[in-house]
Length: 228
Image 1 (cartoon, rainbow, N blue to C red):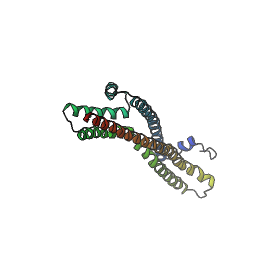
Image 2 (image 1 turned 90 degrees about the vertical axis):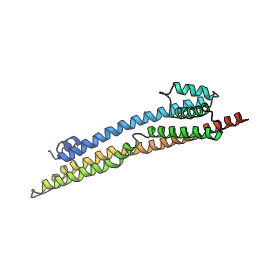
Image 3 (image 1 turned 180 degrees about the vertical axis):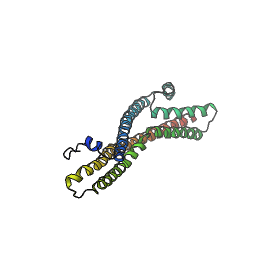
């Protein structure tokens, strides 16, 4: 290879097969992480939009029965908050149909149903987040492995030479360092996205927990009013 031709493509073409394999793995990890990033970005935006829409409808004065009927009808397209509401109302109505009159039992059943639904929704929102964390933590080490192997390969090739200059060493070292560079290229966006999405998911979780408490309070007030 021309000593002056140190472009990344040429470096990779002349690198050892181990370094090339490491780079292919890292490129694949980078593409997969970017796909996960964009999917999660759109998913969280949709969750926030649907939660906002239901929250406005919930506090607009519409009756709980009408909200529940709409939630059942829109089960496939509804957001997490609406599904949590629907699970609580479903359990509440089932207990009422079974002639359960104890207000504590009614409220506790609705809360348990909403908590179970909340956990399912949170698991769905957190999907693929661990993958981004894995890419962010593992990619630099995979790249470092490629670099170490490339440097070993470069120095092994130089062992037979009687005179070694910087111009002789530079291409081999540069080939090896490309693996580390690509490892960081894969890791940095994944780490940034992981931290951002973890913060956004915490906000979603807090908002859903707040809704569960608010809805539980409404049910408690309704049960108190019916008792009188």
